[in-house]
Length: 79
Image (cartoon, rainbow, N blue to C red):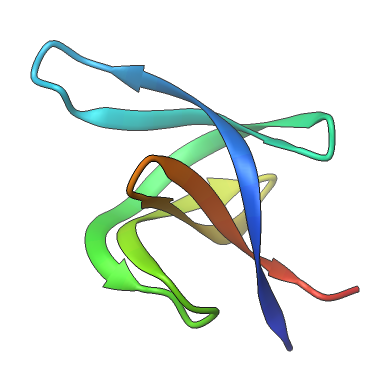
């Protein structure tokens, strides 16, 4: 399983404490609901880069998305 770094658009909710919670990802014009956030922590990615890791359940799959400074990426699978 080979992964690569794909920058994506993310729809988020920011609460009054400044906490960021992603709600949807937008990948190649498709919008996918984040069903559940499983883990939030500072981490490095296997595909390079680091930031805040949000391990999420999306369409019954566990996916890692990262907030890297001011933009988001997902560890995506080569087809």
